[in-house]
Image (cartoon, rainbow, N blue to C red; front, side, top):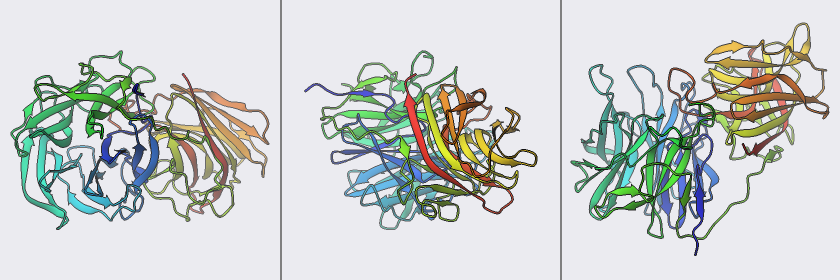
Length: 528
């Protein structure tokens, strides 16, 4: 049987920090969601080639309370595992990340079924981020995480530590063992433990999550160490090879297939312009082998990520193509949609108040870290379009609604309907670049009261052009083609970790919760 080929990235758009596990002949990948709710996306595959967005693990505020979490805070680097019929998910809800300190409470939830319901969280520790759970053959469970050191004369990435977890007591027990300091690449994080043929293998991310990112392998006969670094480290990196399509390769996790093959999932980035990755950090996969010396290595003999990878000896199992248009006829939001920091509830988002429409009640501004009325999906292709139709009758300049291309509270571009004291109801573009607000990009266009308006954006790599249409007439351009490379992890001087979203939002800064009704949303992808 000829093998299927895997095309990377397997999870396009904002899907970083992949953690993969197998349950029988089913494969699941969990990825970071940061400040977007629900928390922790889970994709499903039967062949490692085709992947379907299946569910989210953290769907209740009691599991994940991110109101007030800073940009690129929230859920970092989940770890998904399966043991004796139970799924385990470890995650961090980052509360602070700037300056010397990082507040990183780590939690555990469990479920007998991957689609839930997932349990209430068990608090574990806060000593560092990127925690993972290892299930040893003797039944013991071990939490592994990087240790954060805030002191000025110390290495902030203070190494990898290990502590036993008691499933019966639902808490960590026993001493904390420092097991690995890392290599000269530094910034050692993202630990995962595996056991094979008497060896404990420790996989870590090093070099930082940008263009020097790498995967390091170490091993020991004893779980507590000492761990020896692989002589051919790093086992995977894009560093120093700017011509590679997949950059930032690192933060890896292994899976042993039911056909006795090994694969490594890892994050990567694909620049649209110079170093700017508007789609965020994505998930790719590489085929691996164990050498005669019992070291993990890429199957192609290099340490570079490949775009095309030989799949496992498993029959193809494709899924139906994603539906491009959402007419909001279902009683609940489709699994593709995300909201900022807080769950959707009837107080501000309704699919029932007006049948066939998504109603958003305006709340706080685009700068808010608390209660934004914004629902969006990931941009997953360099070239794409998104459109919606909006019925909205603002009565004041503090009331706004429309179509937004959003990175975070500092960087977005927004085609909005609002109110002007002279023009009345009107349409215009507002933009924020590194926190600098600008509503002078183009002249506002007056709109007739009572008329619906279609809004559209066409994105071609680092450029976005907005359009509008009244009464289903032809599309008219509004404003110039805008450079949107600032909607990327790599734009500002500080480090960010998410990706570009496209969606709908409403604001009412007066506090009267004025409603906007969206008839549909359509997202299409193009080659380019």
